[in-house]
Amino acid sequence: MLNRRILRVKAFQNLYAYEQCKGSNLNISKDFIRASFLPDLNSMEVQDKTALSKEAEEAIKLFEQNLTTKDLLKSSEASRKVKQVVLEALKKYNEANEKDHQFLLKNMVVSAERIPQLYLLAIELLQAFAKHVEKEIEKKKKFAGNNPAGFGNELNFPNNKVLASLRESDSYRAAIARNNVNLDDVELEIREWFRDYVKPSEHYQAYLQLEAPTVTEDFELVDDLLKKILFKNEVMLNFFSEKDLNWTEDKSVVRSLASKVLKNAANLNEENESQMPEIAMNWDEDKEFFQNIFNFTIENDAKSKALITQKTKNWDIDRLAFTDKVIISMAIAEMKNFPSIPVKVSINEYIDISKTYSTPKSKQFVNGLLDVMAKELTESGEIRKSGRGLLDNK
View (cartoon, rainbow, N blue to C red):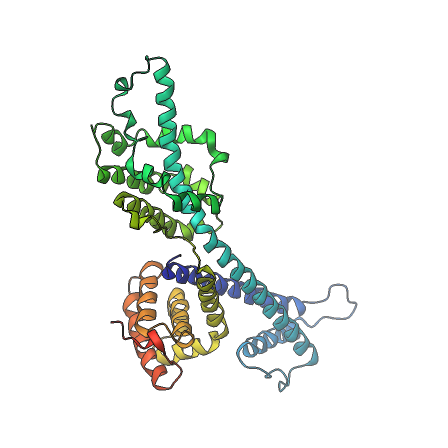
């Protein structure tokens, strides 16, 4: 199962993208309105540019008013043409938003489902490097009388106990098969990447000096290669980015999950056998959870922004960090629509997201604002908790 914090982050990333799309759609709609009132160069009649410009500005103002207030257009005293243009602009704007909504909703799910494949690919790259060393040693043996003692500690990497533990793990092999993980497309590159990036690394060279590496030393090597080479080297980062359009956002999550798998393997306990941080039997439930967060946040956008504006009277809402507005709106949607999740859990989760994705001062701002909102929404009955949601997780 993917950690629900990761799912919240995926929802946040796509809600942020949706807000950006809405901004672009707004500008496109205004451009459409302006273009509708440009002088007709094919007309033989005299064009009143000043009057057309005024109509364009009137239409844009009416368009903006109707974004938040329904039926305002009907009572407007604007000309028929202005109303028609505004109606068409509103239609285009809403259709574009809905198209982006559906695309990002689908993208969010596909992106989450791809995460297990990505972190397993990272581990398989480490396995491939170890296998490459083993093959090179086998070649040398043919010319050295098959004397393994003549190869010093080069066998340390092929014999790495953390990687061996994973290779022998039924759950790991099943996850590899289930997520269709293979490195067939980079078979030749693996040799070059090992030669150019892995072998020269200080940690790898120091590892080769060890006579009998401990499990801890085995883990430290593979974790170091994971974090400092696979996830730092531009060539290998390009390999991942070609497989994931959301790689910039997903990189830290994938690195963290891959490291967790290696750490579990280092424990060498049978009870860790199934501790693969991946999509499992209850994925449908988790998928519904973050799809609902995404949809509820969009559906309640106007109410959430009004609430934020009310609670930040000394602030212009447009001056608030864009990310903070998305984070707070998500938290409100979760607190109001998920009765079984305690309020404190929701607040803490979104504070953590603000630490990573927003400004240095966002943690205190988000915490303070959500505390106040949670109390008032609970008192008004808009937040109703049941079951585990009644727990006060401080």
